[in-house]
Image (cartoon, rainbow, N blue to C red; front, side):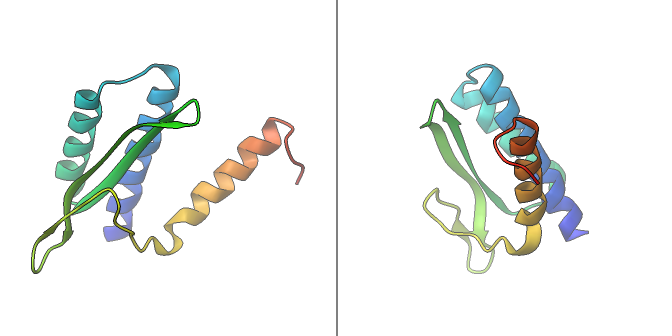
Length: 104
């Protein structure tokens, strides 16, 4: 169940990244999407960065990085992501292959 919540949240942020590449969202839009995602999934914290044209357009952290004792999430914190990044790495490799930038 926890993995499903993390995946759901990850896909929301991937969607957010796609939106950011199509148009420049406001910080308020990003905050609303992130807060709703945390509330819906029950994930305790997340960090969001939006990069446009190679520059960080927006960065913020949401929720609690540690529940006991409560520690608020901060943008500079490191998270243990474990194996969740494998599917994103695979997707990135396939996108690069589609663009002809590498071959499998």
